[in-house]
Length: 443
Image (cartoon, rainbow, N blue to C red):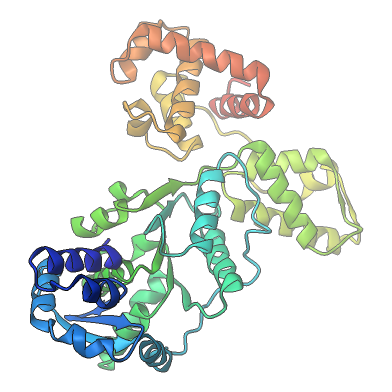
């Protein structure tokens, strides 16, 4: 990301150092207060507070253009405008932009828990200070865990703070359709102009963009333009940047240059709070759903919030059909009887099966769990997996360590001890371990 303020400061320092401007009063009163506003193609716009400063700055046009050409690594031409003139020109150029935001997706109704707290905090900060920090912001998770909600919450909060901001939410599929249509209608320049004017671009499911050569090329240039102009871009994906397939290295590098956070499946408490919020949004104050039904739904559907919401709608629909506002476990069992919750025949209990089941439970790969990577979203699943192997297979710590990239037996022993301690102290943690045991067919 290029900081235009730093580039201009460096330019002024060079003017002074090389005695291109040797009058300190002129340097301090004309050149230092000027602002490098934007770069568009090969033209740089510089603004100054007073109109009669323009000619004095332009006297050094050749030298300034030479310095800036080195800074941007391409030939640069400058245009100097009075600040008010620049603002008016920007107002005239602002296109009509429909944000496409979902107004019901806000920070106020986003349920925060350990699984999504860091992503939510980053999203909130970006919405209040777009383009200033953490640009781009990259959020990743499996489907149905809140990425789209956070994208829209960023846009809605930013527009609430500053209604004049130009914000656009779009899925990568819709972006591809727009590019295809612009090629057919010979309007690619208009599309490019449209996006580079945005203050905030929120693009959902970026993984569907790649393999689309023309769209990827256009996105690359739009991405650079938005970042270079200190405007904000937020991207979501079902994978972290390094795991995206069919994507150019130059884009992966740019995604990694900002801030990335994953969203994990919600822990029991958070999932239940989300479910209770969804029930509240149904708008039926007379509806009573007993706690054991809520617990059952969270235990069986919490890995995908959309699935959880779908099952709630099914339950609500059946209550309307049966003309009842009271839903207990007997009623719910009848509603969910065709949902195939009966356990399938289990595979033999082996290290490989425990690894596979734990990886699927936490939406990870086996390679991630056995790796040396110690990021937060990997450590807990890895330690629980070690603990289950020790408890359910009764194999040695050394044998378990060999499975996990040749870790020392003492490392495995400490991990198992930590799991035992957390099971006693943390009900949600115990619930996760018990649910894994259920999937393994040992409970």
